Image 1: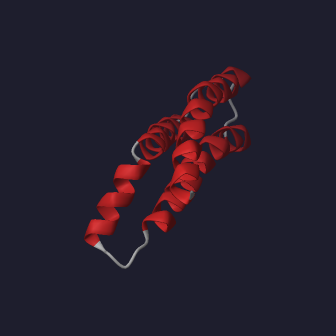
Image 2 (image 1 turned 180 degrees about the vertical axis):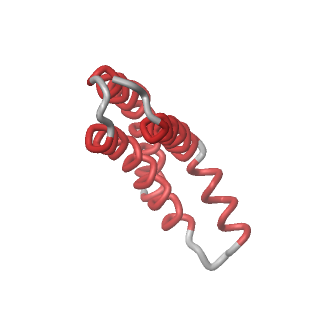
Image 3 (image 1 turned 60 degrees about the vertical axis):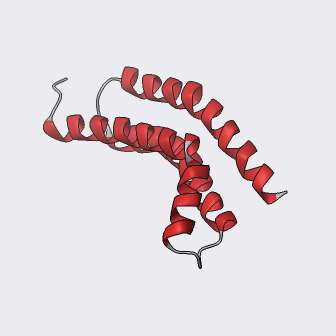
Length: 104
């Protein structure tokens, strides 16, 4: 099958989403402090909760979107699931640990 522009953009979007989820997972605490400095009315626990849920959600939704919209070989889907599992599981466990420590 040929790779169309739509499929290429979808694959690039998934890669960018994985990178964004990784950044949110690793730097969630720093993002919370930054947003609290900019707007002190936002509580730190609220921001860390949103960032953690967003990071974990991006890791979960990427393979689902790839499966739903991509009409190429299943190799891309398997690669995305492996990448989401290997990277996402570790990062999500770390961000969940940081979130749990913040919650007390």
